[in-house]
Image (tube, rainbow, N blue to C red; front, top):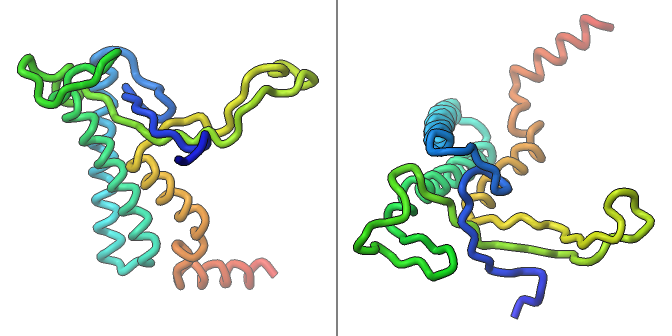
Length: 179
């Protein structure tokens, strides 16, 4: 239906972006605690922005980042408790023997895959010549998309979001003094 450029591809991600993880049980616990601390920091920052009547675009962007972080945290915290292992088979919901993992030890489910360009790199290319190539290889989920969109909007509109009247006065005063 969509062709070869969009594939729904079920993947369970053990850790962070691009499948990276911190090894062992303690690595996963550390990652989960870091995620909880980051979510707490984002909430505090968002509340402060709302009290300061900051730019609505900035508030929406930070909210997208928060929503994505919370979504991935929920997956990581509970997915392993409510599903059986899915390696080589279809996972079952609420198995009698319990899930494949304990609290904060689950995987994050990724499902969107956009292999936009596929092919073989040219022979003349040093080191990578004649190798199979896929442009945009990562598999991701809606939460990852929310985080990415929020970050890109902040980067793209940073002057509008962070250029307050205070900053303008300070910048103007500095320019006059240096002349």
